[in-house]
Image (cartoon, rainbow, N blue to C red; front, side, top):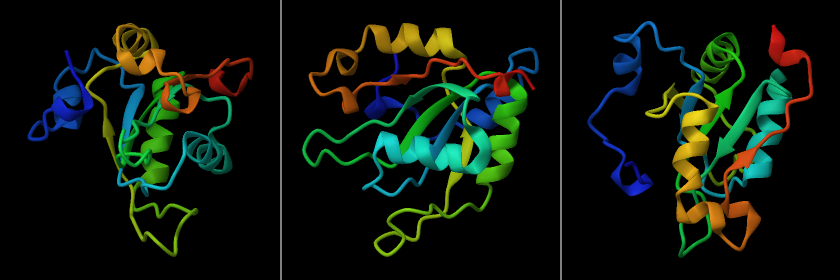
Amino acid sequence: EYHHSRVPKNVNFQEECESHPAQEITTLMIRNIPNRYTQQELIAELEDLGFAGTFNFLYIPLDKGTMSNVGYAFVNFVTKEWASKCIEAFQGYRFKRHRKTSGKIAAISAAHLQGLEANLAHYEKSAVNTAKLKHRRPVVMANISTLGDM
């Protein structure tokens, strides 16, 4: 079972996913997120980039001590095509908010868990899913938009 402190750092998940072409890549790991970003700010940034209604899960882990994010997030898109468009959009992308304190450039790859169901099953058993503060929990988006149907 994976926990954010135990995600293998020496495994290239993009290569691993590409070596299993039958598996559709819909869940991405966005890295180098400025630590001051909140879940709502990352959702707003994704929406500003044209991804409103195209993802149904987002989780940005928070450091328990500082309550700041730990620099990465997991986002599941409703189709592999939207995930692919997000990979393109985030290549060399500079985050818009908190620019004065962070000049971070995004890095993006396939996540170690793929698909909404796998992410829900994983986090269902996680302590973070029962956190008292809702902004510490994964966000499941109600996808009523037709945008996700490409």
